[in-house]
Image (cartoon, rainbow, N blue to C red; front, side, top):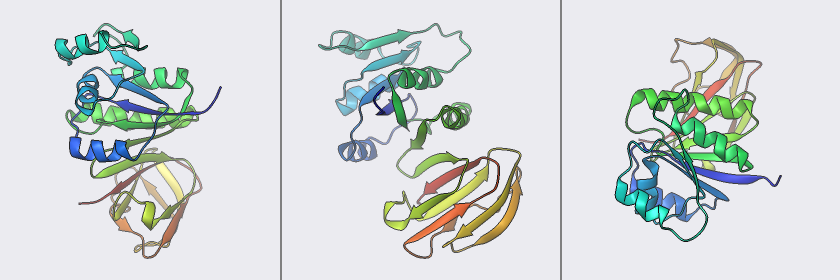
Length: 219
């Protein structure tokens, strides 16, 4: 199956000025709306390829708008009482559509339990071989299971933070950073790697084992 990029718009808070600018500079093969995210798509004048959810947070007028839309939209309707969140179901839909690179928009604002669940879904994507990120106006969040390079002109902002997602992450080496590390082990419960910065045009992280949350951000 051909590799595809996918945009998942969830029902969390969205800065529409940011979203409009971000989407104007991006191209996605598939767009999936998650429940209340359909309202956001309406405001952004976008048509989804699929809509997923129990539709307990979307206005009936918006549902009617898209149900009457010309063109094919796949509707994946679920009962509110279910094991998975709507966002997890949307990620599965995106994978079934062949998406191997996903961006989640609207996944940070609102309820903290949903945000933390969305953060863990990045790990699910990682294990399924799908590159995924959560973005908002101030942050881009990914998870890493191996080293990565960073270029200052492609960063989301000035700051880069790393937090352990597994109990321990071993052998972290940071090069080209304001606060370098060499073969440092960190475990859950530390803030050691919060708010670092590149010192030049590029930098890198390497580590021996574990999973890291990577947050690129600006004030």
